[in-house]
Length: 401
Ligand SMILES: [Zn+2]
Image 1 (cartoon, protein in one colour):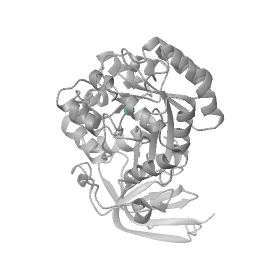
Image 2 (image 1 turned 135 degrees about the vertical axis):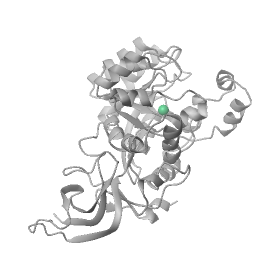
Image 3 (image 1 turned 60 degrees about the vertical axis):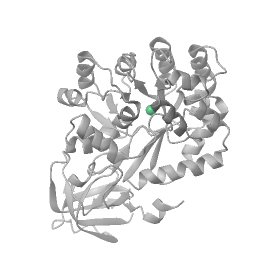
């Protein structure tokens, strides 16, 4: 197996509080197999290729752990309506909201959806994202959910983790939320499993949407089929989604704006990650989640965009980090950890990703900029090179259109 040597790099420490110069590592089959001082590379190692990183800073590349990247249509007009005082409910009654994206996505072929989505994936890649989570949830029937999951499977660039979010909203064809969840369990989940299209299930738990008891049955059935669980929880109210995530040892509970002191303590004791989505909170004019309380109590937090056509039409990681710093009082090292090791834990991929250690994937960013230059200027990422499993992602791939 051919070895690659990366040397002359300033390796950022695991807390993102400093770096050590003149470090080196060896990559074999995409994994880091040796790491240390560049003056002490063991003689038995015979790398075929050498990369001089010119005293650049090196740290784990970003993991974007919550997006709804596959969709057709636009909700831009709806944003203006909301801003002019039309309520979410009225917009839904006029044919807007999630169900309008469902209609547009159902009407679009897999080929067109793939082309639309690949451009968005490239936008994430260009910001240093090496692992990207994408949810289904704008198909809402067997044919269209499978179509969307197959689109996700065919995307190129970063490692893609796909999540089945059939339980995003109740489609018009079903009378009750319970009937629809039953349909997902009996008709859709077994096909997702059989075709190996996803091994994670997500649900939007909120009053008057999917409520706790029906959601619990659904998620328990999904777990029995072998799916890991994640939940859109406590975004608009104390919906009990966070309670359920903690009870079921979900990978993550996402949004978590409405939390009490007991929730905070329970997150601190559990492995369930609190995924914070401040750009969505900005667009929705919601309160921001209590990042400080969660982190100070010892909970693991992650940050993500929640990119979607309705409540968060931005893919800007810099804006997310900036809001976390400005509005949630997270320190810069905490933002980096949330976007690397925290996000890896939220996706259940900590064994391979989120940190640069022997045995883990060589997914990293190399840059002449300093850490302070990141999560500072909304809309811009400092110049950098992205490596995924030790391979440089060339700008030609990123820019392809
Ligand atoms: Zn979401």
